Length: 479
Image (cartoon, rainbow, N blue to C red; front, side, top):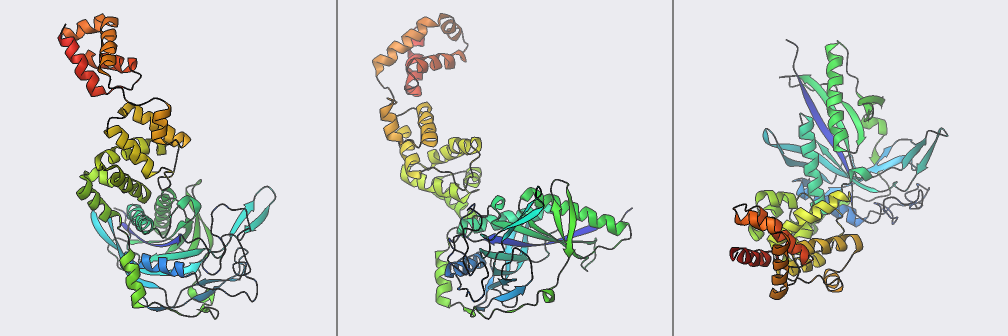
């Protein structure tokens, strides 16, 4: 029987913070801007340009550290990490090595085997580098410095994960916490959340760590899961063949489902770290820390319990509506404004989710007004429109930005409750479908739904379905 191996994984997660300006200057952090239009002498690395710390970056880093159960260091400082690369205009990166802002935290994850704590070694603040674009057609590389100086926190875990499942559970938990805090949008596709994977394997039962490799800047959960499994298999294959695993940085190629070496792994001494002479140490007061702690919003699990208790939602409903912080906000606001939490939940889980899926919209940006959706729900629950008509109005709200009340009025969609009109429509259907009437009277109750649908059609979908059923049942029983 072959040897059994255990995978040992630690992550370095970079999260871009949600502030509007960069960490040490006033340049915009807007995603997707024209290359090299969001730069200044500070983030472009001009000699003599001095950095000034963005206070909001520090506040968001502290909020994240508190939510991740970290110890906050009341005194921290910035260091220079020196290296030359074309996307690094200063030839150094401002980071925190010796005195990071937060340390010794933990995150609880849920796996198939149950709950597990993943320890966080530290959280530190740093600036991002620019972006290199390699033009294969011309053989040139172009550089965009818009991202240079963008604010990051790096969340460094201990090597506590043992599988791709645990890695994804940990990342999902981090993403949920940062989004609920509203300190980062964590959009992997835009690079505002990236993960470096440190992975080694060892024989099962061993307590010593194997030689680790690092895979850089993975930005999709699918790629991360594949990279974990692929690198695990590669290292085991080397060990089984009597070869050594080299400590190196590797890049995962999702198309080839394989990793390739980038460079031998540097140690801290290779970067010649030293305290940044242009930035003073950071001192965090107890009063400010308490203020940040007091302002912390409810996190996902807390809101799930709130939704169940306050609005009578099932555990499943509460889970669906808290999967995205924007959907959770939209639901809570709509429930309060409409006065009907159950109907708000039904609309969010039904029509709203359907539209988001059909239009491939990001759940974090649903583009719907809670006030308008609440008015539509009130129109439906008060009987001013039928459920069928309400869906038609909702389509107009989504596609055209229509105001629900005005759309109902302009298109004559107010529900018809005229008994005489309903009587005439029911009589017409009974006369038009004698065979169906005969089948119903003969015991085929399923035909009744067809007849109700025909009356609704005669009324242009504007009749109250319950009223139609009651009236039609009365007329048929008279036959």
